[in-house]
Length: 389
Image (cartoon, rainbow, N blue to C red; front, side, top):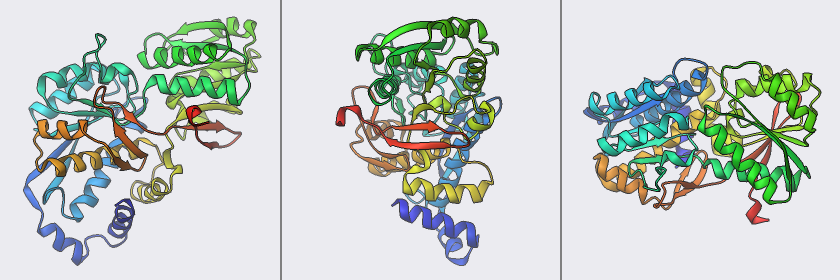
């Protein structure tokens, strides 16, 4: 299916509205479209991620429409700006459901936004598929109750922390660790705690734990304490802009530890922003464009939008294609029918790889990868599964 997707996208971009595609479009039911919403940070510091997600959804929807849509109906993507902020993201979700009449919503990539959206989706009965929102509370409430309309495409915080802690201790041979967390971000605190827990359970030692918050810009007070502890590895579960600052300030203070992060590091801007401070450091994330079909899609995407590749566009594609699979299985775009099919997913093959869904917590079972930051590029180390060794 994906090979046909790439071929069709390439053909469409090369030849535009050729006669064959026009004929197919004429058969499409455009009066009764299947509306799919998107909430992402379309403005602000992380707009490159939000825009990439929307671009990916629109590019894939365009290709589907050229092939006859879903159930013979046009696929229409409606994107709204959540600004990477919880209140704005909830407002955007509600507007998509109550005013635009979407059958499902894809987004966001922030746990802090999807956790409150999940509660609203319980009330409005319209599925939401988080992209890179990895906190456990995105799909399951603190009391253990499942959010029946909340799903995700990414692996969860505990798994990223498990991989980072395992790789640092077992593969890199590091024995002491420190961590600096953003106390205002549930993603940062959760991943950081799981990194340390795994590392110490394996036999490592925690020598320093510090807290800061997004917007501080100066982390030298915390890093000075970490420098005194001389850790082998410093876990930095932050988003890339803060990571770049922390990395530079850590090196200024003489910290030689390997910095290790999670998918918040995953952007093409990391090398430029960090000015070499992260060379020899690692992070865990999704395979990204390193899988063959994702690489092929990336070439088409780059030509279409003339922008640097961001993995969020693959999430956008996979969100649309997973909903397509659910809608076709249900034979309807009724939100409740879609929800049932999403929950029953035993197999879905997207550009980010194969996954199945655990119906008890709506979390996907899928592969994750390790990346190393080199002097002028990020190197894909490969899929890492400690349990398989």
